[in-house]
Image (cartoon, rainbow, N blue to C red; front, side):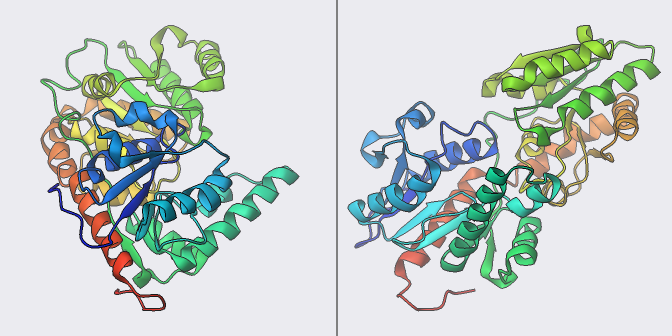
Length: 380
């Protein structure tokens, strides 16, 4: 991205408050976007000290290190005050809510929480109260912000559940780092025993239990050796998943790696016969996209946003149940032509999603918001 000189009073503050605290998709997005937006000298990054390790190589003069606070205080007090101090003409946040005062806000909503909550009933009074607060915050943020979604599917959710006109939502796809995630020689073919890869986390929406159940069914149904590699920091779920694999008789065939570096993650994608993505809903589908960039076949349960991103890529779709997912795993092993198509087609599709393009689009929206006069309608 070309560095631009300061233009009059234009200053932009980029909210990286979750960087260093969120180790899933939001953390990835903030690190990738922050590093690219910082190349424009009108941009200042707002983060806590926990984020600095993720911003190595960025000039510290463009970083405002702010005190770590609860998220609500960060959004409504710390960030708007920082924006005022640096004279920001607009603020960018990648969150499910944003500041209700201060400079114009470009709010990039990762996913509609109503979709997630519909699958997870609020069973405690505290959780119900938290959701009421989050819902009210998001609705008020959407009313004042320039709303951005990463897919048309997420835009449709925001329209359906929050009444945001589709014409008022700008769709800006996320990207993939093609220098780190790229095909390797013989992806998925170098092991005598086929290995599946599943990237997990403490979030139960990854449905790692379902993945292990389906893998056990595959092992039971087939005679040839097969393995499952589960990557990612599992937190307190690690003993549960290890115990489940052992109880199903596949403990020695399932490897729990823990957190992976980007280099190790790319290697895991490349060495897998297929990557398993079992989340029931997504705002974009960053993991399948990074796997595709490595030339890997993707096995995914249906999610509108993922289908939108992968397009005509080599994907095996599976219903979210043990038998259907086991059958999809078997298809990935048996269909060598499909794996070869994945190595040829999937990187080409992934290459159309770049972080540079995402950063350019975000900067353009920040510029528009900074120039818009109070009360002036937005361009649609």
